[in-house]
Each structure stands twice: as structure tokens, then as C-alpha cells.
Length: 104
Image (cartoon, rainbow, N blue to C red; front, side, top):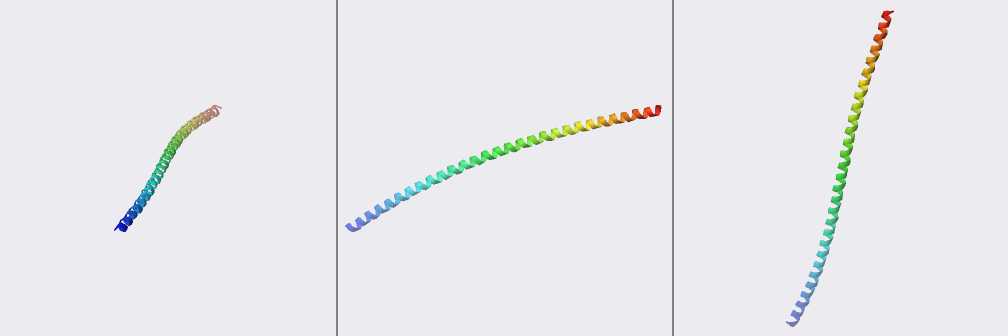
């Protein structure tokens, strides 16, 4: 009976050591998972910040494109008006020449 009791105590001690080793391993695993989780969260935050920066650059580029398009339209309108004025001047000069020829 004494031998069985001693064997049971040794087995209980072995199980306690094994349990403690598993707890240490589980704690290390949890810590590692937390570190990975923190790293993943940081990476996600970095990606979100990069995405926001890209969206801001895209919005600025679109605004610049719209400004350039408006400037180009205005320049085209100015050139059209200038061309019309030149046409009117040419027509007036032609009429003047015709009037001079008829007077002669």
C-alpha cells in the first residue's frame, strides 16, 4: 500500500510538472499571438494611412485636372472670340476694298 501511495505521489508530481510546463507553453503562445495581433493591427493602421494618403493625392490630381480643363475651355473660348474678331476685320477690310474699287 505504501509503495502504491509513493507511486501515486510521484505520478501526481510528474503531472503537476507537466501541467506547469503546459501552462508556461500556453502563456508563451498567448504572448506570441498578442504580439502578432499587435503587429497585424499596426500593419492595418499603416495600410489605412497609406490608403488615405493615396485617396488625398487622387482627389488633388482630379481637382488639378478639372482646373486645367476649365482653363483649356476658357482659352479655347478666347481663341474662338479672337478668330471671330479677325474674321470680322477681314470682312470689313474686304468690304472697304470692294467699296474703293466700285468708287474708281
